[in-house]
Image (cartoon, rainbow, N blue to C red; front, side, top):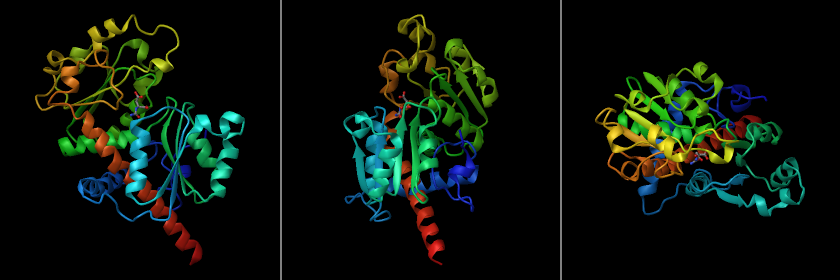
Length: 328
Ligand code: NCD
């Protein structure tokens, strides 16, 4: 799989696709966060629109279910004044036998400027980016277990909004790391932005073998791992990606790893609680925590719009610059 900076960045280091956090430096991640900060206010206006991407076409290609990610991408495109196409893939031609590349070529014939892709197969967004026409941007909205870079950036945005600086923070990511594209992208982003310590807390069966090489401290005991952390990120059990019994039972999982008020008391007294959604109440966390004063789970959803506006507008900016360079 060809991935990394050569595919995502153009010759001058500008973002032309957004596929993975891997290979992006702190300056670029900070530029996205700062740009999103500028857009966060747009949602509070009476007219929630800016004209930055007027005349551009953004196509949402969701081959896997999604509620939050798809709708916030749709709103992000619309708030930038782009024309947004939502393809209902299950009802479209791919289910009639058309290949992914044929679908892509047909959309390119309609002069689509950007594809937002979610797919159950790891590497799908990279595949589309490699085959897209020059000048067409691709954003990865989650591919298999591999990456979910806009989710990671909106999580970083949430942490920065609530905690200020990244340096000095201890962050714990709890749960099904093995199947989580979100965890992989978060770990890369947290380490790039320079937090003091990233912990993962998980049962042995839900940790990937390469976990130690990710630059994290590993805990199998929730009460130990959560001690003194500033941020607790809970993950969903990805049952749709599990083969066979990886856990004794959900009840047992909750008993050992579920986030309750009592457990949260061991974290820093100002600690925030995050979750990318959808939440399984009573499996990953107690409702009293999900709805409690430390929870920033709904803020994450709102920030997702600003962050996706930032990524779309930065890539469109690269395209506009490229267009001018080609003319000049
Ligand atoms: C995540 C995903 O789809 O990877 N959700 C999301 O994008 N909001 C995490 C999950 O499904 O558990």
